[in-house]
Picture 1 (cartoon, rainbow, N blue to C red):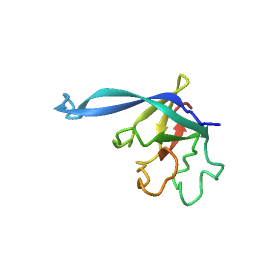
Picture 2 (cartoon, rainbow, N blue to C red; picture 1 turned 90 degrees about the vertical axis):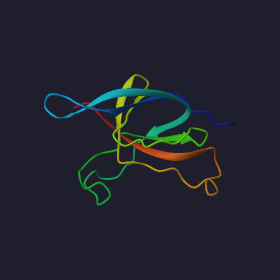
Picture 3 (cartoon, rainbow, N blue to C red; picture 1 turned 30 degrees about the vertical axis):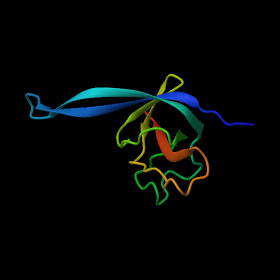
Length: 114
């Protein structure tokens, strides 16, 4: 049996280099669709453990295929099945020679509601 993921959408807020009247950066949004992403329920760890001192609970974990051209996911919004999730941290891909599957980037997401 061959695994096949689903399609997700990633949205970034990118500074334009301009500032508004309050001297805050003006941003535009960039959106990208990524195919063949594996989606699974988030980690079962306690949200107050030492790896998440801010108490953020992972709602989902996704695995992005290595064919995707990596770019930072810090503060990105990920839409899966019509629901928005925020990326936890700034995940990095696993070295190409180590991962034997076609997915090399594991990303934890938190629910943006509530």
